[in-house]
Image (cartoon, rainbow, N blue to C red; front, side):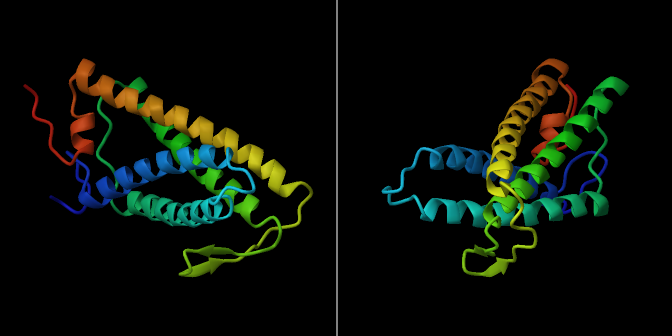
Amino acid sequence: MHWRNDGLRYGLVSLVLHWVMALAIVAMFASGLWMRTLDYYDTWYHTAPELHKSAGILLLIALVLRLLWRLVSPPPPVEGSPLVRRAAGAGHFLLYALMLSVMVAGYLISTADGVAIDVFGWFKVPATLSGLPDQADTAGKIHLWFAWTLIVLAGLHVLAALKHHFVDRDGTLVRMLGRVHTPS
């Protein structure tokens, strides 16, 4: 297995970042919805948001690393027509933009009162922007709507990968599993 991407497949670094982030984002979405159901007397009421914030900061770091890695090791070219390639580019851009937007909104919720985010006791992320009018509420609404949009777009991303695999029978999905597509 190659560390870097090449013209035929994704490398190990890209694969790990993609799949770990995909699973983490789905888990973060589910935990965010679950946290909305907790009441003050629930034992997870205070703990769950702290875990969610810590995981969100780690995801933000992973996103930055992933974007930097794309510059160092560009992904293989998208298979398909020019329209498919443009749609894939737009879809990937939107996925990255939504991930970043959800994370920034989460940061703005968490730091609205001027308190740093403690990331699993390892380090703290300072509150650099706080005290804006209705900051937590406004950022909370943005966080929720963008999270839903991200999950829907990620679902479309999955459907597109399945379409490439089962209908087009090209190597898009196979390459995302670290293999080289050999047409039959």
